[in-house]
Length: 155
Length: 155
DNA sequence: CCGTGACTTAAAGCCGGCTTGAAGTCAAGC
DNA sequence: GCTTGACTTCAAGCCGGCTTTAAGTCACGG
Image (cartoon, rainbow over all chains, first blue to last red; front, side):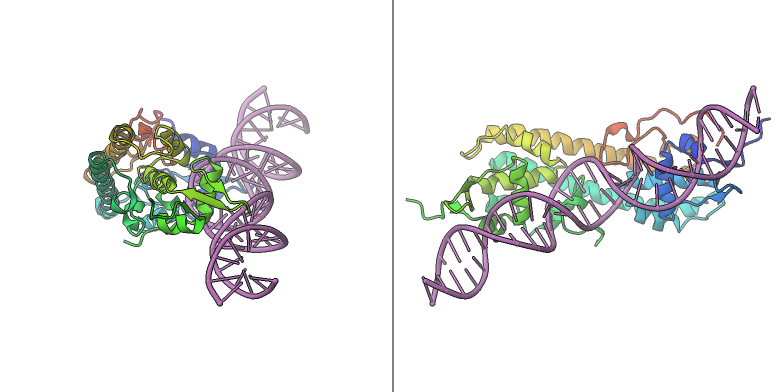
């Protein structure tokens, strides 16, 4: 049997995780992953880092920032495989998050459908246009770029 | 005749639209809105711009970039109130967009639920872990969850 | 006619999540 | 031992969607 490589170089971790080496270094700078060093100063990753990287990418898909991913990550064990319970707790909070976003989008859809009926965007009378209602603006896509709460999350 | 102010200053448009004056200037620089000028060079907006600004914000909520909003906008009449048909065509494309996004999130949820069952993130076997997948970016392609299995390796 | 506040411009800055580049070092195969 | 490619660090750049700043001008009430 071929021996499993115990430690991965950054290139190997990059290949195996699908995450660019530059991104991995960036993650390390944020404390998302860690590495040992060779005598010469090169990074060597434990296989557990594969899981950590996967976790981070999954968190991003779920809509978390890297900072939030770091917090989630801190709730999982470092070097052992997370138990079902570990993962359960984390994934449930992600699912809550995804559900919230879906609900926001559904509300938006209803409003758009309403607008089809009224042919509006006539400001004052239109639900879509409602400057006071910031909740409506915290929905889709680059909501963090819409100006107000960049550090997000005031639920 | 008209009892309403015919032209709005940028401050008035800002107040009425809930969009910062700096953002309005930025929108103008992108060709999203237009303004006439006083002899002294100050902007004066037609009331139709209120609708245009509302449209842009709505487009953002629907997940469009400003560039995409500009394209949508080009499908609406400039100075007259859009007809039901005008608005219908546009809003339907937005709704499609929102639907796609919702579908993505539903897929993610299913995967997360699956992971609760399997306690995974064990890479090769987990749908969440899908290398080659540049998903987390704002690019938001449906490529997220579709996936080839990760490169065949032991995990 | 003047003071004041609202306006003007161009350029720079900010945020998150990276990528790219420059200049240099390490590890491994021949 | 040498070559080559993978690695190292630090700094700067990029994207989108703005905001902020600086320095200066306009418009209106008194």
